[in-house]
Image (cartoon, rainbow, N blue to C red):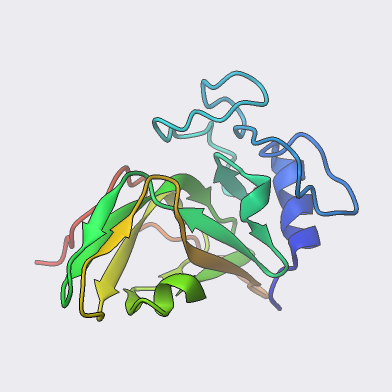
Length: 186
């Protein structure tokens, strides 16, 4: 089952990532940091992404949260900084958001259609239950010219799926990632 905006908002409210929940799926709610991110209440620190207090792997966390990123059945992830995607290359770009998935949720990453229409593809588009950290987006520009990404551009949709009977959490080499992380394969 794919989580709806209402279900995503409910889970984020329960984890403390947002401070208000309404029937309109909090579309106009100001951003709020999860747990203790060091940002003042109701204000997301957009210069850096900090590691929220550990929630013990039981909560869905997306920090900093933005109501404009909440879509009917996904959450748009933003790029942490401006970059250029040259044609024919894979560029590693960190998300602005710190993401934590509990044992009962996994996520699929898809490029937003506005960037897909420019020739941008995403590789490595799955996030395991238990992952926590900034996501490294592997963006490939298949277009003829450079594609400019600006800080906070919403580039990728994170589709959150329910995992039935999940009891294993991700404990791999990319756990607690900060920034763009290159391959750790030997």
